[in-house]
Length: 107
Image (cartoon, one colour):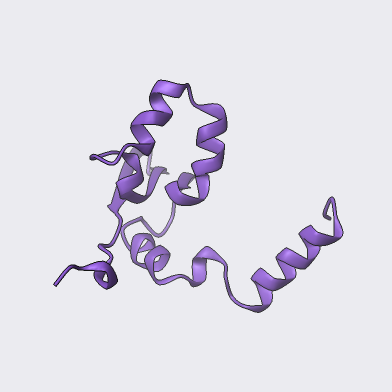
């Protein structure tokens, strides 16, 4: 179900051209850091979430995200997992840095 024809067209393009995150090399590299199974899993891709963060975060927090210095925008993604097994609870937190842009190096 979709709200508009353009949304269906966009989804169709994403699906047919394999643009899902699970098809991207950076996502697959990040996914190797996480455990195979989890009862609760939380994942955020910072670049994709930027419009939501800008809308919902307080200005001071979003400015820290957007700054040119070390900040959240320097990270590709984060995930948190909670796993319950044999009456024990395990958690994992993964955070991955963006890959350096090798095409813009100054010679």
